Image 1 (cartoon, one colour):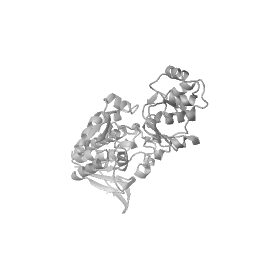
Image 2 (cartoon, one colour; image 1 turned 60 degrees about the horizontal axis):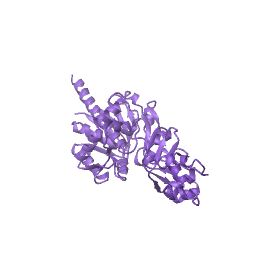
Image 3 (cartoon, helix red, strand yellow; image 1 turned 60 degrees about the vertical axis):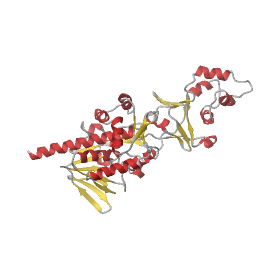
Image 4 (cartoon, helix red, strand yellow; image 1 turned 90 degrees about the horizontal axis):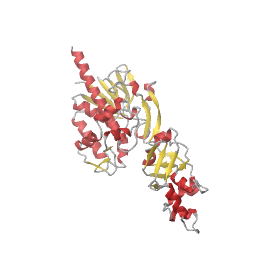
Length: 393
């Protein structure tokens, strides 16, 4: 059997290692951090949204335009396969009302422990605090606590992560090793900076619910949170790509009520009620929505109903990339073949967030990592088998 090296101990790397080990290869996993799956564990703090149980076309549409290799990976390992994989590790899952799938225990640590134990039972070797720095001829070079180490392998899978959350190991330091093949990183699934007026301070930490957010042609009904530095949360993340690319942020504060009806209600208010009072008493807007109107729609005029239906939110751009949940950019798919092998170096396959794809939160990110890890592992195993046959002839 071949010697297989997997560099990166997140979901994509561990999935590639699983495939290679189950195919009978001798697998070594090298991770730069002191422990495996740190970003995976961080995702588990909010319940570990593994995937989303929805029809394939709708699921893949959430990723935006997909290269063929990415579409193939998701065809082969989509939501149903993710759920089956979790159950095979002893983690029962359930789908919420939105279709989002979580482990019943709502944590990542039990699944990660079971996964690592499974790999140990398959004979996988683990190295922690081994940071890959490139190649020396055929050998992968690592900085380790014991000095520089080199490993030779018949096949290698790189799953080095993106460039956000550097404290968890996803820092993009590998990018210079792929000069010319990397699209610049940009934050994804991130909050946006807003310079609030003083009156908004008492709203910091308050969720905004029951609104529709839009950025160009993209809309979201998810909730978001007003924070000291701006806006964050699922509703914002869902449209963050369009916002990053320059589309204006617009809120519909009453998405289930038409503008004509809002105008009728405002016109019918009691004469002694001010507009501010009518927002609360007649339109039933909660205090945080009224605060947003005061922040971005003053002075109130005859167009108040229109502003309620399309409130423009001024922001100062995305939060820093290291605070983003994920990143856009990474290794260009043109640099890879149809099975994720790097065209510049035979036998080296790439997977996970280091590739140039982007997805919203809601289970899409993890599924993409699982799927590309599986494809890279299978492609590496097939390449090793083919190479072995060729050498034997």
